Image (cartoon, rainbow, N blue to C red; front, side):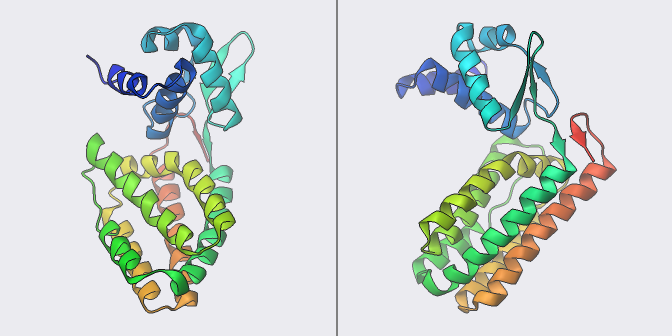
Length: 233
């Protein structure tokens, strides 16, 4: 059984519709880079790979188009949306503002137990080029940022942060492949937690914004050093 069939069978067991199955698998492949930015795809090929009819695949692709992860071209098929420098800069600019605000509020609201959880999440690492540890690392990173946003006590702010974290997931996976981001991420996360423990909202805000900027600059430097198809500077 190949790796693509395993998640499909798992989804079937949970009673997912065929469209949901196709959407979940295809979205994961785009986010992780298995379907690379700028790659052309077609309904018949994907339907064959997923062992489905074209209808649920078409519906899944339409949903990915709405999310901005795919682009549709009449009579030509689909393309994984390329990554552009402007999109990346815009996304990190918004993230910095949102997560900086969340850090200010979380510094006053997080419990000792929640701070301990953040400390453990900050220790997450991965082995460059190893898929399982990379997936765990990316998930831990998202949980870390989500926990701080949730700790703000503002549900709307948390929802906005989560939306932008999801948009950043593809970029973060790219970053793990371009370079070893273990030291940078671990150091930045522990620094953020230290200021949250001190209940210093302003320092936590600045540390969070600096962390976002470090990530953006690291991605940019890697993209310039190793240009890839589907990535536009």
